[in-house]
Length: 110
Length: 114
Image (tube, rainbow over all chains, first blue to last red; front, side, top):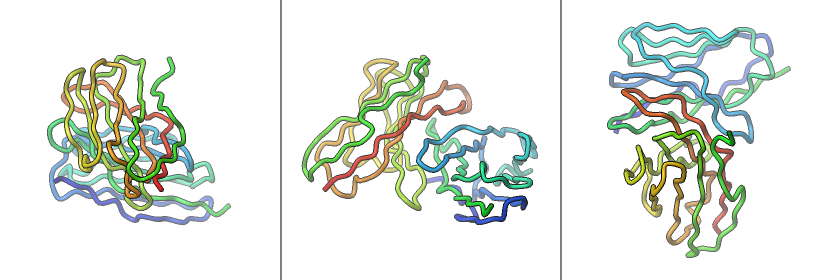
């Protein structure tokens, strides 16, 4: 079935650094959602992107949907320790089910 | 609103035992789903439902049953527990439309099968 690949799977950054994580698909996506899961917690919705080339910002987080709607990126500026967690992308995988990627685990060195 | 609730929070089963994981939501969401989370595997969809009386299989349905008799409740049944079913289980719900809406997740059930 349809799948997305999240890269990298793990990311360790120094506090204050910027970084970008990606979600890539071999097929065109109708939409993409991003979620954050803090250690020991449950996934929490961050954003949904629908339009080709769409860019949305939430404070230090910038989300982008590719022009071909086959990839998406999450860029975090000036990483803080509060950004620690696992970030998932998810997409509508045929019929009505929502399918998640394997996630990108972020750790931050203070 | 309580949101999405799951019980129990923790459970230990012996191989071969059966049990039901409970999930309820009070937001009148049509869509409900069950995921399991294992290290390095992300969230894998077990079963989902788009409304009362309607269920369908996800990516990893074997060994699990579901039913949706009401809008509010979506229990997950393990018929004969196996050690491979040791995992954290999340229930989620949302409105439905042409595209998915924001998913609300429950706090999870941590299941160990010995």
